[in-house]
Image 1 (tube, protein in one colour):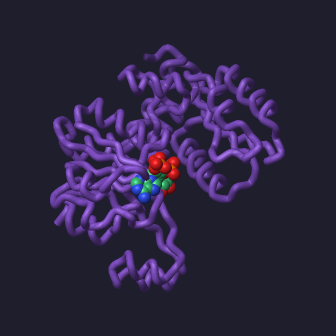
Image 2 (cartoon, helix red, strand yellow):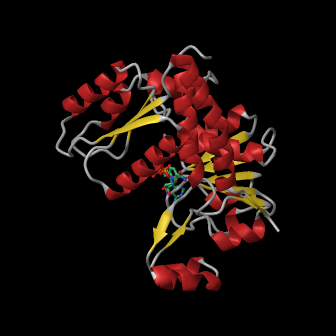
Length: 305
Ligand code: NAP
């Protein structure tokens, strides 16, 4: 039986390690760590993500606020808001929830966030710190995956790692983090030739593609560790029948929808030696790492480290 890498368990561990660090900042600086979230417009998915982030921050005693400018805000107005947050001493972390409305220059906004408050790790300064192995905030999802692998004592050094996806948020930072852990890393994308053959070389296969169950048995080397980053919602029964074990179809019929990753769940469970389930694998770690980044920023800014 493969090992199921339980993201909820690791998330709870990370959260319980955060609590005393919040107390320490409070005792030292007379204020808790502070996180400011900017949520532009009324995208329902973004609203759900932001609520989960601020709820977790609240549970940990992190001061948090959500600023909700209307979708009609201009790039200049949003830049002014980010600048104001950069200058507020009690704000240690600034998170601009993506995606932003199309008329806003997203790159200019992300560049305007002070690198020392960039708890998403998206600022080019922090990407440079990551690339060169210097300390700094790391992109939350890949950093959470490294935590998960380490806490399950999955060896990384010397292993062949294949990352499918080269986004700035997941694929690229994931590849750097695995490289810093001394894996031999191959990065794949939509132009990679014979993707299944490349993936079959992996001891550790990370799928961050955004295509439901695209990675099937022919991509997975027997005994590989498979990390499925994808979160895709299936609403079509024929697709559910193609992807899931018949025992899951009752769930689909009840809810009219199921979540699936980028890896076929049945194949992954049969062929891998360890894998992250969807949901309950990688997903829970992202918010926990955001909290960790916010606390680390507060520790740095208040002179605790
Ligand atoms: P993204 O920005 O759309 O990037 C997708 C990557 O997959 C791109 O590099 C793309 O290649 C590659 N790709 C697309 N189709 C491919 C194909 N047929 N063969 C090989 N490569 C292909 O997505 P993302 O933001 O990295 O997210 C990826 C997935 O992770 C999504 O399902 C997202 O919902 C999920 N996600 C989960 C979390 C979490 O907390 N669990 C966090 C972030 C994202 P090109 O560069 O060549 O286009």
